Amino acid sequence: MSRDVHIIDHPLVQHKLTLMRKKDTSTKSFRELVHELSALLAYELTRDMPMQLIEIETPLEKMMSPVIDGKKIVLASILRAGNGFLDGMLQVLPGARVGHIGLYRDPATLKAVEYYFKMPSGMEERDVIVLDPMLATGNSAVAAVDRLKATNPRSIRFVCLVTCPQGIKTFHDAHPDVPIYTPAVDRELNEHGYIVPGLGDAGDRIFGTK
Image (cartoon, rainbow, N blue to C red; front, side):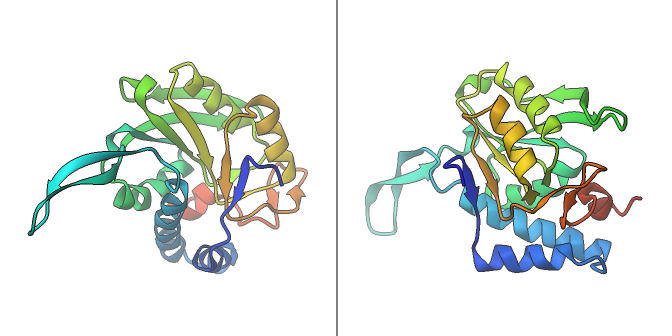
C-alpha cells in the first residue's frame, strides 16, 4: 500500500466497522456506530497534527504545555453522508470549524456535480480533514479536493470508512499529495459504482432513507 494510504487497523475500529457492514444493523445502531467510529478516526487522524506550547498554571506552578492547533482544523463534510462523521469528530476536536461541500453523482456519467460550497475564512492557515464515508469511484473526492485546493489550505487529509483500489487510484492520480485514512480497502467496485463487499449506501444507512 502506498505511503499515502494509512490503514487504521485498531481493533476497536475494525470491530465497529464489521458491525456497520452487517445488513441487518438498524439505522439507529448504524448511526451510533458512525458516531463512535468517527471519534476513533479523529484520534488517528490527529496523531501528527501541529502542536503549540501555551503557558498554563497547574495547582503547583506555571508551565509551558502542548496543545493542538485546534482552531486551525476544518472538518470539510462532503454532503450528505459526510455529515454523519461530524458529531463524533467534533467531540474529539471541539475547536474545529466545519465546512460543507455539496456534490451529487450523476447516475449516467458517475461524475460529481457540485451544488454547494462553504468554507470558513482564512483557509491559508488551516488544516483540512475531508469527510466522506465511501471513497468509491473517487470522482466526488477529487472534485471536492479540487475546490478545497483553490482556497490554499495549509494541509488536506481525506478520511473514509471504506475504499477500494479503483477509488484510491483515481484519487491519487489527481491528488498524490493528499493522504487517505481508512479502516478498510475492499475488493473492487461493482458495475453500479458501489464498493464490494462494502456496507451499502452510507448516506441511506445513516439517515434512514432509501
